[in-house]
Length: 196
Ligand SMILES: CC(C)(COP(=O)(O)OP(=O)(O)OC[C@H]1O[C@@H](n2cnc3c(N)ncnc32)[C@H](O)[C@@H]1OP(=O)(O)O)[C@@H](O)C(=O)NCCC(=O)NCCS
Picture (spheres, helix red, strand yellow):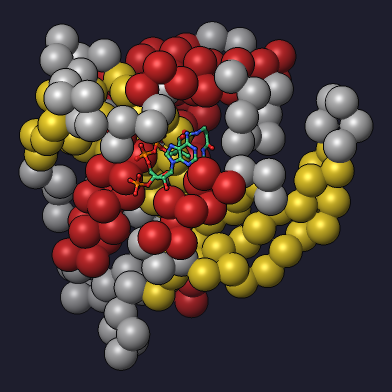
């Protein structure tokens, strides 16, 4: 099932469109990722660890399966009037059949657009899309998981507000360039309490 675009207003009154991402968004998604990584908040990547250019970034997304149209990938972007990317969120399912009811969610909002409701809107619509999805054989997505840094209370609060719970902690998972040790939190959400 494809995602029908949704228009909404951000907290500052600016209009925003949430739509499915396409391979043509690659260069804009690369610019967005670079901006989020350069802000040095919430992610585990350093600026010099980004792909060399937009083509390499786009190829990596393709290789990860993020634009597959077979129920593997659920990529969304939030755009401003004119098309500039404000944020993105995606959900990716593994190919193994025993794990196929689950997948991993990732999200990033441009530093200039944070705190305006973009992240909440992306989460809301991505989870609604997952809840509504049916594979061709009728199977549903049941389990959503994500990883979040222990020093990222903003993202943790956002996830908890959608029902995600802490499932585990990887202690001292990352070490910042300044030498701080930071835990990684594994959070999960079951979409269908009765199980599909
Ligand atoms: C975390 C992130 C996705 C949230 O998106 P956002 O658009 O900034 O957040 P929203 O404006 O939708 O706010 C969502 C919630 O976050 C919290 N929040 C927002 N801004 C905040 C701030 N400045 N300080 C603390 N909490 C804040 C609030 O609980 C808010 O809930 P509300 O809607 O009830 O007010 C975004 O800030 C981001 O991309 N950060 C950098 C990268 C990152 O951390 N990615 C997640 C990796 S796991």
